[in-house]
Image (cartoon, rainbow, N blue to C red; front, side, top):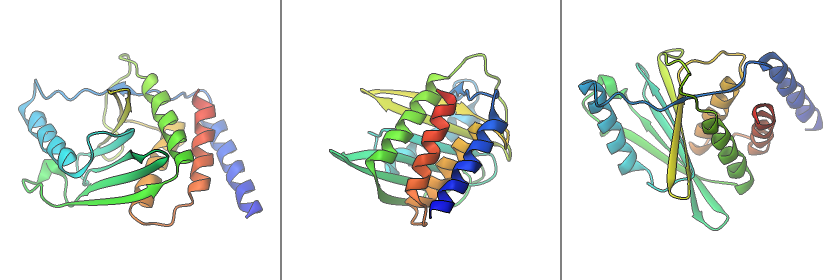
Length: 205
């Protein structure tokens, strides 16, 4: 196990070196629903699914919106003092390509407070980097990633649609995908994931 953690640290260190100077910044969330009816309809479908499948009060929320593959979402909620839960919502098919919005899958799982603290810190820093000067585009496979951070009744949102495979931002997306996998019952080592999040935070603070 000691060797495993050493190898993990070396991997993260190399990743940081390869990402050095790239920075991590995301754009403000822009939906264009007021200008484009098709986008407004899409947003309304998605919002309906979110309101039906997930709690409105959350700490962080992550949405991956693809132009082809099914969308997927996770969020972290505080259930009670020092008790937290991660919830996921996945669709059977992409919202752009179907009129049937009833085929969704929801999963929930307890998540430890120390990881929740690191994830919420990461999301807060990411959204704090939002700049209107960022360029909008289409990510690999036509995926846009939305990050939401809720604090004191205020929800802030940032999004990104392009990221290099060697970037810290790609590491953030991998963390989010690992959280999805954990919530859906897969064997994800949360201690290692927590170390990885801490390491990313140190690089982007």
